[in-house]
Length: 302
Length: 326
Image 1 (cartoon, helix red, strand yellow):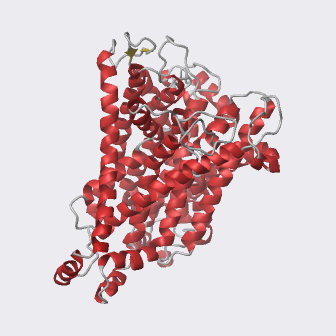
Image 2: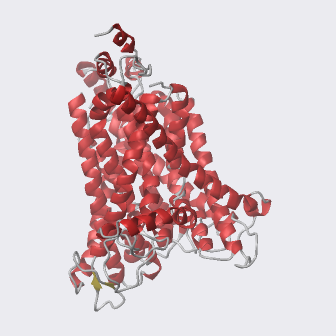
């Protein structure tokens, strides 16, 4: 063995070593290029999608009317229009889904970690995995079969929110579980040692420590369900007008608006479809970035 | 499972003194109730889909699993089979997986083994952002921008390898399985990358140092330590990605063109078709009679079972690995 191999002990150092030649050196260099190309290959579609959406949709999105007016009385031939009704519908449906999914998801997460001696922990964990894998169309179909076919309800925004809840719950459960697991045990023990009862320990010590992580996972879950289209197609009709009531009548939503406007081959329709897509991406990205910022301030470090 | 309260003796003490407290009982009750709600919901989804689907399957005039027919307009003469849907669903998802997995492994290796820490984080975030783009936007971009761009390569493939049934020239417009396969690959890339990254990062430093000490080049070190260590994780990540691709709806609805009713079966990726999810979504406006709806619910049920099996395999691989490493 030559002395040059000794220098290789640092795993971070590149392997441009004097001892390695020929085919081995070629393969080593080639693979460095290959993995870098793989990364480039993945970044291309991201920027491509963003570029297309921004360049085709920005014209409408920067006009104030886009955010303040609905599509009411805007014909397929008219340029302009507004996404207010769609944004309103998306926000209402996401808000209802969040209001139901967060308490259930956080409590189920508490159950999995703080009550890990209970008999149902394994089944709950398994069923959460199953729920994670349910496709959004199946979730919509289930709500349809339950509320519309069986109970005879009409199609409405609230049913969409229920379908979205099903998609959101497992994400919140897993996020809560993960955060609670990294809360140091010493905190719980210290609290018990001071004679603090279990429920106060959970509410006043464990949850506040994990709260920023839980908020992060909730925001990511909201971002995910806002872009879901499949349940909307089954469970609610589209309308051009504002409808703040999720329990009655048709209600617009951004994905539905994209879907309707993409069916309009005229330039105004195409422009509105891309503008609605840009609006949706903006909202989702804002939630994502917000989630990242909050997770920076997390009280616990891994 | 780790119990988070003090060890046994003190534990019983804490429990005894606190059992009677209203707050303790309340939070234990609500936490258990939420856990039960999760279990009940999944069971309800499965049972309900079964209950709604079975009457229609029983009235089906053709074999449900093997027929290519789909005609549910006459409730007294239901004729529907899923074999075409199954083929298109599996073909497009497997194609997406075949395309996405090597790229995802490459990115994960680059981020964890090659990139300097300073730039590894932003790169990881950029790939994660791919997951933040809603699927309907991918659909819109896929049909208007990507499909025309990759069409020449598809034409070249079908001209030169057309003798293989998979690449037989078919409908060479934009709405092919080939186009949706590429779009699905982009959509599942972030999931596979994220999990692969995590497992590659856990490779014991001692393994890597040992390989380097034996004179391995950087790539030989990756090939002999990181890849074998991460293999189960990558396999299960691929299965989770496959599960996501199987159930993807909106991108498929927008991109894949529906073949004319009664057209011949084509195994080619250059043909159109319908997946389970797109079939249901395309006909959502026509759910009028319970029999007709039942046929679509039956298709949804098969999709549910399919994704369940794929996800279960993925979880099983992960849990088996945990037993090994701990």
